[in-house]
Image 1: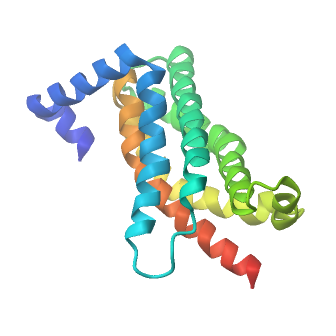
Image 2: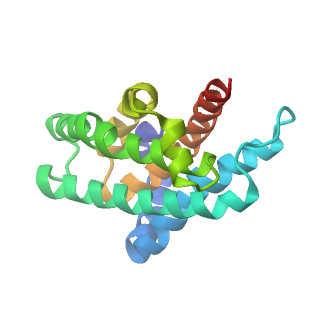
Length: 199
């Protein structure tokens, strides 16, 4: 819907282009705080609002998550820029398909998912490296990273198709919006995994 509105309604296009201009002007000063907010702070606040069990992420862990997601935001932004340099920045179907394939078959399973699994395991182990390694086990990639990747395929495949159909300057801001919802999915999936490990 966002993509359709961008290309059909001038006010939506103007608003999104203004956001893109801010992103271009500020660079990483926009990218890193936006990702820290979308994937670090907002999922934490959502957990705090839940009335069931207390949030698994504690307040003292929040700065760590914010730094992690800010760095992931910078990496993703650089990846988008690299894709634009290699494949171009047009919205042709071939360009979108190539970028989506590289994203979902290489970058996401080999970089993003392992980074998320390892960083959350480290946090969940109380920032104790040996305990994190023990909790992960030998088959952590197959047992933890791959289920997260399957969820990522469902969420991010259509999302990156839309992202790559937008101008390069808008790709990261739209990604940050979806990242907020993805952050909530990670919260629920890692909570379930921790409960299973504890049991």
